[in-house]
Length: 206
Image (cartoon, rainbow, N blue to C red):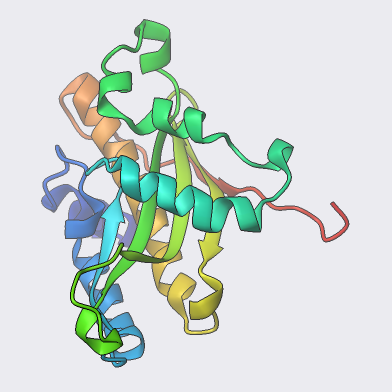
């Protein structure tokens, strides 16, 4: 079996009919690498990867947008609007898509989230989850290509190797979307792998 066939078999064996990046074995391996770095501080626990597409949470989406997207992408013309993201990710909005919209790009955001232990800060009640990092990406069904559109890390957690672990999970998720979309439409896995994965970049001068 070639490396390509082996990778494809690995993807297929992981219930390719469903799209569930947090349950992938690669996700747990990445979290194992990060737990020793992030949760060794008693103030933080329950490190996890959250797929906004799989488990839609308006609260987490808004928190991520306000805390990381706006500060990291202050120019509005370089930042997708929150309304566009809600349109792409809210199941109630997606259910209203017409036939043309159903053939459009599929979006997801993988968030690395942890909890803060109130006892460590002398607090009695829980506080909002802490979003350490996020990767937003899109899968273009007609072109069978993926796009990494935004990559952000909470400034307090930089230089800890977070994106080194999270970025490959986004790549893997795009491959799953490719297989999942083809299976949903045709009832079988695709003969070809995702054709390409691109990334948006910018210059320092921009």
